[in-house]
Image 1 (cartoon, rainbow, N blue to C red):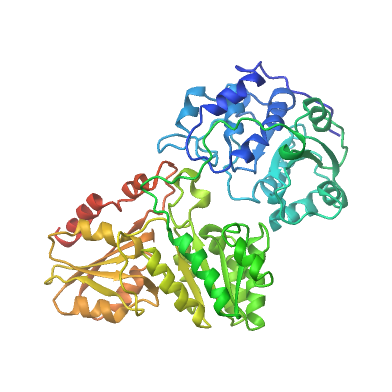
Image 2: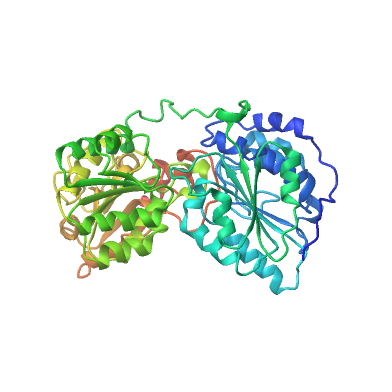
Length: 557
């Protein structure tokens, strides 16, 4: 049995009263300000009075471990770590910058004191279970593992599995704090604590602002059982608003068009719901506000399942089994990567169709870090048969391709991005369009939003430029026509996703012709940088200057 233990570390560099000032040092486009402020008191009590860890013991095997699963809006976490001396407060002012270690989601390899990298929900609690098992296997029975989650985050199925396992396994070293700020779309019958208690946990519910109540709940004995503390934080109903520090308004700078592909998707799909009773939209919280009017007009055909991405795909596929045409939407990393088995089996294996429409792409939100990037999405779908993949380069193209997608019965992926070409091009058919014709100097294929950069990069070069908005099926005929008119041909593929994704398809198209192929795109190694989209284009060599160097170096070595 673990004893009632409290923090024995050195005093903090800053007190609780300094936390608002420290949070105020982090400015910019912070996406989850309320998520940060709701965790502040819990984090302070843990680090000030409970956790047995300090900068001096952060690498000790016997330390307590704190895992921030609720990685959205980590301003409070960073402020508390700075206050406790894990890193200098001067780092806070670089929050979200390209070279800063402090992103909009924490990275354990960059942030001193962070035990895990988080941001994608539903990972912290399983990691905490494994950490307890690892400590126990090494005979380390004194260190405790704490994990902080959100109430809506508990919707993720991985959390249900962890809760159901940890109780019967008697993981006494495991402690979970749930920030209950009433953010879950669907309330849990009996409350959150009852869910843990039913699985054999000790659980208590306290005011998330009351430091003494939090301390008592955190240090309460729970022999032989894991422990959950539900910290209620309902500012509108019970607490005065806390200054959030950073600007939380969306970015509406001149560099961001008001009508993005995602905006156009919402507007177009809303009209399609009025036009075609077969169409249904399935959401997992993302873009729900945009679909509010459509949900009110078509409550049975606009379905939000909460933060449950596997259910998102499964429910959409189930609707397809009844003859509906489901449009399933969330960020690319949560639409393709997380529920990939459902994509493979519930759609493909069942032989039913649907339309997956993603947002976020490869680097749309660089400050959010790798958890919200999906450069490998198209490559993953390449492992499955029968998928059409559209990569529009402009909102007008996105609308055309979306309308084409919902008219059929097949399986279609529409990959949307904030990156956009200045002008739309006609996308009347599935083939590649010849945008610029050369005289044998090589072929460059620009995919979707890469066209403008490719045209600038190849200005004055003797190359043929093909434009692709539909990459699967791959237009082998157009490539053969462009390459086959001359002798040995160099082909460069410029894709806004994983570099080399389409090189095999291009090789197959030219199998009987002498050729060389270079695949350019997002690098395979994790960049671990934040900043803005232009920073990442340069880092991946996809800006016009880098593209020109790489293209000329390959075609004219």
